[in-house]
Image (cartoon, rainbow, N blue to C red; front, side, top):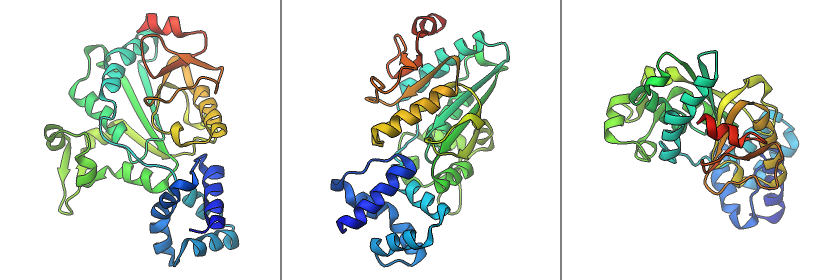
Length: 280
């Protein structure tokens, strides 16, 4: 790939999705944009860039930017964290609430596996303290294709084998004639999916008790990380928490949040860590 073409596409990824792609990973750009190039009949990345410049089509540009974002996900990623959310965090949040309602947001939820993992736990392991509560799970992603796949809830063998046990697969999914596995209505009933760019305000999504944003920030430029964290923090209910992926810290990025006590990877509103620990 020519340097000029790489620079154009890397800049598009940065501006549109906050993604930082080094030149050493130019191959990722070609791999991620190949389906779009084939669909549009482009013979090369140069043709695609030329089209971007000549069309000035915001929807097409947004599609390309979204395609350049990593979609790595799997069922029951960081299983222990989800277990703690179910057994400790949500009961504590429900106890502190007078609404009987809990809201969880998977920000940058890709194709939905992590949101469905929590949905499975609600079906299989619902703590007594949460019985009767209205629990709403929202999963958003910048990519329209990923969001639609998540909403449909159909997964191929490659997706299914990553983190999902045979017992839970056969209990909560139905094998289709196509060879795909479809999530049950019960699982899909817990979760809603929506396309959303984390660089943009999330005010329209409402406030949340728990925001889970894992392995999203690590692929972003610093300025984008700052913007995303500011947007996430703005949607956190008083006493709520944000969960990040392993190794994704916020030191030096925001003064709005601080590490939660005794919960690695969890962040709460600045000045509330002790209160959050007591509640849990």
